[in-house]
Every structure is written in C-alpha cells, then in structure tokens.
Length: 222
Ligand SMILES: [Zn+2]
Image 1: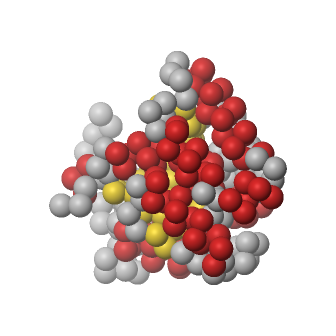
Image 2: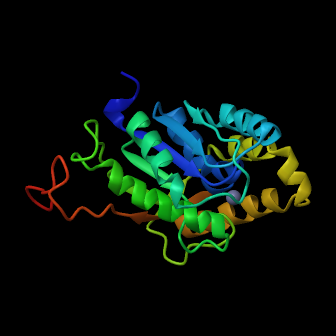
C-alpha cells in the first residue's frame, strides 16, 4: 500500500515556490510520517520547474504534475486539468491557496480547486469519480484572518526553508523577501499555536447537494 490507509494529500498551487512558502513544513512533516503527497503546479518554465523539482525532493513529495504555462495564464479552463490530477492522485485532502489571497492567480487557483473537487466527485460524469474530504487553504503573503488549524512544523521548518531556497530565481528576484516572510510568519503562527513554528490553514468543506455522488449522506454527526 502506498500510504492510502492513512490518506493521501494533493497540493495544487499556482506557481513554483507557492508549495514551499505556503505549506512546505506541513508537506515535509506528512511525508516524514509516510503520507503520500503529490504536487500539481499550474504554471512553470524550464528553470522554475527544475527549482520546483529540487524543492519537492527536499519536501519528500511523491508525484509532481508540472506545467510550462505562463505565470499569469490561469483561468477556469484549468478545472479539467485539476480534475484529472484529483482522479489520478485520489487524495483524501487537497491543499491549495486561499480565496482571499492578494494575488489574483492564487485566488483563481483556490476557486478552480473548489470547483474541481466538486466536479471530480460526480459519479454521473466520471466512472472513477473521487470524493475529496476537505480542502485546506494555505496562506502566502496574505494572512488568513480566521485559521481553522495550525500545523506544528517545528521539526520540519529547516527542511522547508531549504526547499524554499531551491527556488533561487524567485528568492533572488525578491531580495530574500520570501525567506524572511516564511521565517517571520511561521514564528508568529508558532506563538499562536504554542509551539516553535506553525503553518495556518482554513478548511473548505466540499459542497455536495445533489444525487451525483457515491455517498451523499452520513449516518450520524459524531
Ligand atoms: Zn504564487
């Protein structure tokens, strides 16, 4: 078994480096515990994909779904691509951007993932339909005002920072802004979580309101 007993994670991001800045410590922590983590990136080019591969090697990611699409070419037409990644990876949960992120591509990515999660679970559309249980929305530059969970990444922070530094073109372009931000933000979240360092997430529950799903009811609430 490839970790399926314990669940599986698919991370869907707009750009190479978002996976490290938003959820690097969380990805590495789960990978260390034997959870399979796949990463789907919507944009990229030769240089940035090489950086992403190096970063994901450190984070312990399993499958990478790369793209050569331009940085800003993110639109609704990518829903089917994300549905494809979901049906291939069959994750228990998906980690992606937050709809309130200041970056328009990140907002679009969050909306696309939300729709793709719903669509991928339609058994009337896909014979191999797959239902994702929860979406975890991460933070990049914009702090989430009401996080639902704080993941303790004290033990995986060093690896996550090393992964972030593999995105040399971005770290250099922004004059180390991202490494400083990641350092400060994970320390602040650590204070809130009563641990050394943490990453914050908001949870989006998939909407299931029709007769299109394998199982659309629960037996009890607890
Ligand atoms: Zn980005």
